[in-house]
Amino acid sequence: MSIGKDIIVFSSFRWDQPMAEASIALVKELSKSCRVFFVNRPFSIKDLFIDHADLTMRSRIKTILLRRSPFMNVETGFSNFIVATPGLTIPINFLHKGFFYNALNVINNWVVKACMNRMVKEFEIREFVYLNLFNPIILPNLSLRSAKNVLNIYTVLHDIKFSPYMQRHGVQAQEKALKNADLVLVNSKNQWRELISKVENIYYFPNGVEYTVWESIRLKDIAAPYDLYNIGSTKVIMFCGYLSSNRVDYNLLRLVCENYPNYLVVLVGAYEEEDLIKYKLEEIPNLIILGNRRYEAIPAYIKCAHVCIIPYLCNDLNKSVYPLKLNEYLAMGKPVVSTLFSEDLEPFANNVYLSSNYEDFLSNIDLAIQENNAQRLENRIKLAEKNNWPYRVNLLNQLIAQFTRNER
Image (cartoon, rainbow, N blue to C red; front, side, top):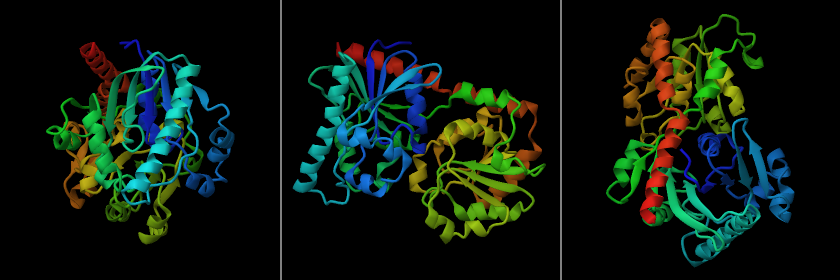
């Protein structure tokens, strides 16, 4: 379904960051039927000094400082979208609320808006739908002088009170964003329930899966990634995702390693160095921490797993998390064992081993491997297929069509 409008997306991530995976999957699917412009979260002066040696930063220096070629066309093989990189902003998150913070935030908003105005002119955008992906501090809603915004959409990705970076100023900013948005999307039932009494037009919009991408790898006969190539017949328990002490239960992870000493426990994803030291993870003999890998490489790693796990803490932060990797595990046909950290997992109860305590989690790993068969594999794959991004985006396009029609 085509909405017949350009879409401008402003994200709390940059398009090539590991954490932007869901945002980019959404953008790629949207760009199949309309022009999509993805505006990166801007770099600040602090970023420039701290990350000046980083290859990603170095490749963008001329764009950030001199405003040369701020727009890049990204080809996905089946669609394309434009990525815009705004100019340098001022780091202000450390400041207290008040006049000084507000004045500098106006400048930061102007920097990003200037990039958008240039984009509108260069690409001759006349009407657009604006989609803000969880960045209430900068341009939660958008109006431009030379193009008509037909719909402001704000997306809540998790509970902002528990965001280490945004909790200082983001809570109040999000209240304003929700009030001024035409349409609000939330990807967890917990957030939907918390906000339903405060927001008129709010819809549950969970993460999806790029099913065809994962299916193509599942059906191929490919070699294991180089860092798992020599493991032989050793069974693999795998977790893919961001590792942080406020999200992952490291004590449970250690118990998994101790209770399955003949298995290899593999962690794929970015991690915090201090967590490795605090929890002495590098001392665990059957634990391999591979670090971050390109999104395109992840299916090949998951293909090596005999069981995939989501060892999340059952805390207030994770109550509002719909785990992106869940449908990706299922798309690869893998049995999944998870803690029961969110009610968003309940629809998966017949296909995922949900565990209410440590003992259940440990026994479910063994059960998941023992019970694995062709029928269960097929059920998991079918469930993932129902949660694909084309289905999600079709629903979004229907909402956009409905709300733009109502505006007229």
